[in-house]
Length: 84
Image (cartoon, rainbow, N blue to C red; front, side, top):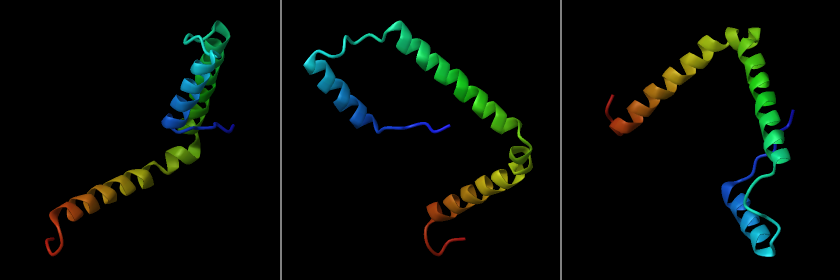
């Protein structure tokens, strides 16, 4: 499943343009809300399937080690050059 994403300024500009043309009432319709709720449910199922997958569980230690390494590097960078 592919989910399009847009930058917030693009969405805001499109909303303002539609509103100035009179295309937008400012309130979502029942069908728009139902469609969004369906998308949310579908994405939740998708994320649940990923989290329950064997590959996700097997790579958990690697992700945790990566987070730890990033945290250590950030601390070293914050100390400045020449300090260990």
